[in-house]
Image (tube, rainbow, N blue to C red; front, side, top):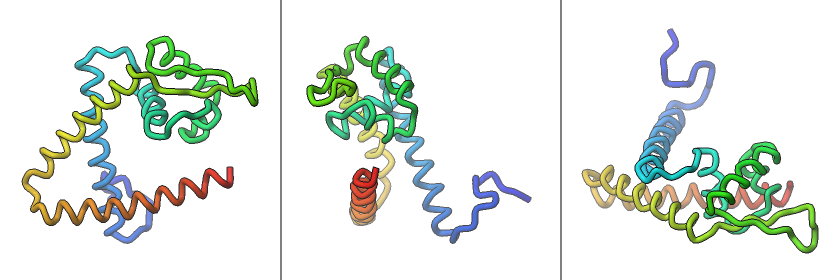
Length: 163
């Protein structure tokens, strides 16, 4: 009988299944907490637009093509999302001098303020989650996450060099 753990047909050591499930669940809860800021603040931004805004915030200035590649969506989709974000005042873009076909996307102070408010809310949520966890274990968890994130950074850098 198949369970509802999402692993039907997936063969992986159970510790990795547990890690994946736990990280996915934690990420979903943290993401949902951040989305509350958008709903409560009555911001006119869709989840897809917010994902683009976050990518620009965390990744720095970017081109529309790069955003399309990094988010795994069509360039036409990114164009529509960026247009809506620009109309709402969350980002600006300009044509690159060296290639007039490309646009450089930059987050505005209004966009930064929204992202920072979402981050603040998410951090408070994580703090509440860890209030009952031994501080030593919290620090160890942070160390492990740093190692994993460094691996992701290396993979991302290697990927961007090959594409």
